[in-house]
Image (cartoon, rainbow, N blue to C red; front, top):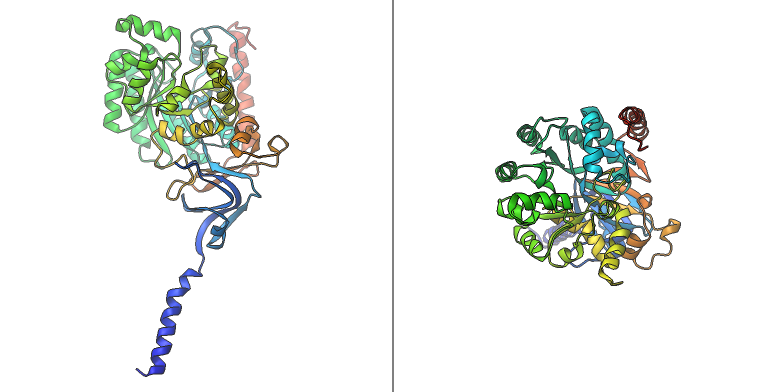
Length: 468
């Protein structure tokens, strides 16, 4: 090879090495000019930042320079709006949207009103209609993942699959006859079939959902705990929620608290997610932490029912896996986690007599990474980090209630509402863009729910309950 040929070869080689540094990497979605709240361990925030999504994963998150490195099939320029992880609702009964606003102030409503109403009206159709409506409400409020407990959860799963959300769905197990099972054993069998059907779904995690310790026998709770280990699935339950539960369990166990009882029978473990957790003391909290279970904190529902305020701040500060939930739409009336923020922050200040208690960053953490940890999904969701699933929401910061925005965490907790969510993305797919649902027909879903209210009205009137 001549000297001239060598020089040319070297030049071509150098060019081939240098070329990739100028080529833009192809991605599916690029979000630019964003105020990015990553909710990672360092709580990194990027002003005018960019986030890149390829497939269903986040491939880059950082400052504005990222925009020059990627070529996107679709771009969202959000003009400084907040970009953050999708919100996670750790406890609800989504299908109960069709019962919303019934008997709001009836004492002992669960036993005197809800259980009898469900006995008359719960069906596959009702579950599907209510779940469709609740799913739309959550997507429009920025909820990308939720944990649900109800009946006919395979119907809920179909609605989740269609709209494109992520969910942990627990099939209820309870000792008395309900719509889809005559007893707890039938409920467990139904749950097992559901788990086998959905255990490999990419966005749906099937689970057992024993209603509560006092509405199931010790044997049933132990059986569910053993099966959860066998199938490696979650167990969703109401725990330490009411004085009725506290009294019943004390009678059964010789004076133990619900948490202590669950621990002693072997049902307090890493698979468990306990909703409410109001009536707990320091000993209970220590058992909860040791067990590695998750906790769902449902402020609106708890204070509306006058059951009390969970020591959620203490649990959070002690490292318990705790996230926010709404409870069912008959309890807290809404399914919006954003609308929980304000109450969570303010009520904990009140009960602790400390204006500095529960600062906004802790509230947002409990709605994202805290909730992901409660569901043992922190390796997949809860923060905007490379390699995590692309569950992302965009919050409008130009709405009158969000102007001015000096601190994004404070703006979210004390000023924002569900209507401020502009875009909702799950698994890299845009489900809502500029408040418009893209994967389901919102009008048709709403119309079907409105039609079902006629059935509810007739049933309530015929039953003689004057609650409308």
